[in-house]
Image (tube, helix red, strand yellow):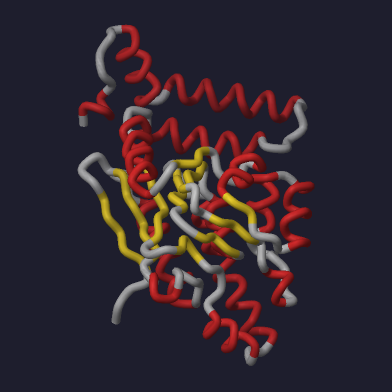
Amino acid sequence: MATSITTRVDPSGCATLTLDRPERHNAFDDRLVAELTAALERLGEDRRIRAVFLAAAGPSFSAGADLGWMRRTAGYSGEENLRDATALASLMRALHRLPQPTVALVQGAAYGGGVGLVACCDFALATRRARFCLSEVRLGLVPAVISPYVVAAIGPREARRWALTAEVFDAEEARRVGLVQEVLADEEALAARAAALAAGLVRNGPAALAGAKDLLRRVAGAPLDDALLADTAARIAAVRASPEGREGLSAFLEKRTPSWVEG
């Protein structure tokens, strides 16, 4: 049976997960959700993986929910629908919490859950022909499981604007609202920028990258109180005393490349 996801890991440890249902515009179904979740969990546990890029085959990044899947869910019981929705929520959480840096490479249309995948990544690059839409209300649905990540990415006001109108917006608008950080001319430029990002990311301490992601999740929206100050102080103290922290500082002072780059 053909898989919905392909995985490629380059010699530097950067992994590319590719949504590989181009004939279905990489739309979500239960198999794609399960396979992508499993692939993310495997990569997250592999200490050799330094960064994860999320790409897609064909003209679309992801068209959201597959029509056949939606037809099946229409006949599900309440318990079956909850189990199905929980699986999708688990996918989004797995991508959001991955310890390695994550980068979405959006070459085409991202609708519904496709927008959720983009929002879950640490940053996103898009080509000029990319299009985005929170299309759920057109189907009488709501963007429930993706909403925490979309709101975190673009803010509540912009989220309300796009979720309530279900209008399509282009890559430049996506950059304006913060859904993507950079817009590239075409797929060739997208690949070149991704390669440059990968080359930079592998120069950073892998434990430091995971620690920075966890730190930023902790401080986002947190009150600036004694507990937060104590937590941030404890984190930097622990990192300074860690093997990676000591190696990074020594390498800087000795004007040499740190061991994680040489390795």
